[in-house]
Amino acid sequence: MTEFLLWLENANHWGWGIFGVAMIVLEILAPGAIFLWMGAAAFVVGLGVFIWPDLEWRYQLLIFAALSVATVFIARRYFRRHPIATDRPTLNRRGTQYIGQRFTLETPVIDGRGHLHVDDTMWRIIGPDLPEGAKVTVTDVEGVMLRVALGDPEVRAQDEA
Image (tube, rainbow, N blue to C red; front, side, top):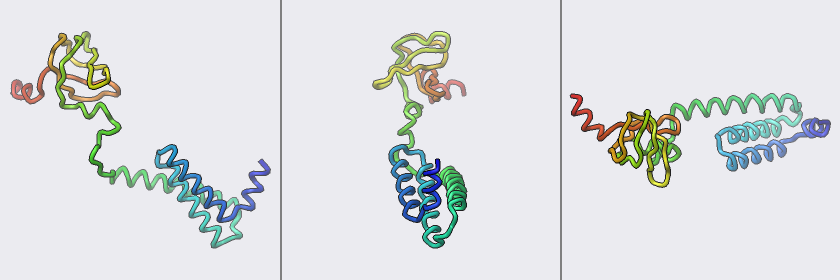
């Protein structure tokens, strides 16, 4: 612990810059959009230490902590309001790409639960009791289960009208 405090007392702009690079490398290895902003905060503290070399380590640490929390909060808020446009919005949400698609049941749905083979995956499904061979449409995703309904949703809508 004393070695860490000694390092903090002698921290300079290079130390904060190296720490910032380490945070960005960590962000590359474990993406989550947190370490990136902590790295940016470390660079700002390094710039501050470069401008004011006598800045105490306590203030350096306090500024780093405050900037880390602030940048993460601001970035998350910004990206929640301005999501990044993508040509594959369902890339990491595999079940949502099946919504609206029709499939044939290979096994019956009993007591509202069953299985559906889609591509290379066996999905758990929920929906009305249906016999083997029934044509179903995926209507929603609930966690890791697909919700299905009998037939084509457009045909059902016309039948109900």
